[in-house]
Figure 1 (cartoon, rainbow, N blue to C red):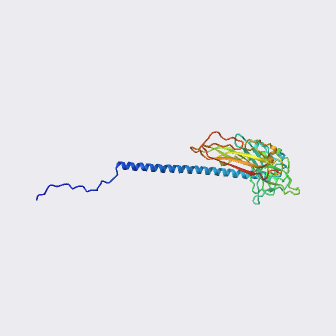
Figure 2: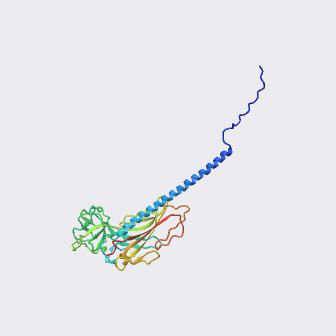
Figure 3: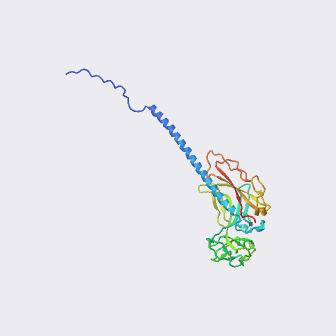
Length: 350
């Protein structure tokens, strides 16, 4: 059987090969690249915003910590000390060797102004010791500046090294306890404390027989200096830090990081009517006051400048003027916050 010649089948209409052309692939890649760039840019922006917000929050927290510490101590300045006539003669005698400025007397507050840097302030008051940690009452007249007999030493450091105010509510003296005390004795002898130098203590205290006055007591004293110091961190960076020096021989301790400036001005009551009538060491270079006017301080204006922990690329800012200290001339990229707080000194003066 014979057959005719074979013929090719015609292709089916409407049928194409599967896949993408090169142009389609390149277009898709271009669109994907644009989309990824937008996503990355958004992520980077959000990350920078989050980092900035975190640093600003940290800065504000440091500012709150610094403000709380300073306001608390300034407000308590002079608490527990006897009334004063408003003269420097009522101040408590100090050994000038125990503070960087050689201060030999203080009562409540002692300001240190600085137009080229941060101000400093010394603060003294008596702790409000309660029933769980009562002040010690003298049980015998003080016969020498080397020790006192008391009814208890509950809450006091057994080994010494603690600043103590002894007061009969008329006068007051500052001592430092030394080793050798007992449950009924505070020792001020030995240990080499300059606070116990006999030349600083011209009065020996009686038990408390003055009519109308409670017994003579010995209570814990807080005597501190606040200042700002550049502190080097382990990573090599340097941070301005609010420091507190407890002025008992221990090393100063940091209070708040990245506090760049502290300026203070003081409202005085010069006529004794209880109201502020004069401002000293204030904005604009108002004149400083004499040591004799320090007991007239009734208000402190606290001006703090805080900055972020690290500079921010593209941010232009510089330390602003505060108080009578001019601002910095060069921008350094740190974000900053400034706070101004008025603090009444409730225990100063008469």
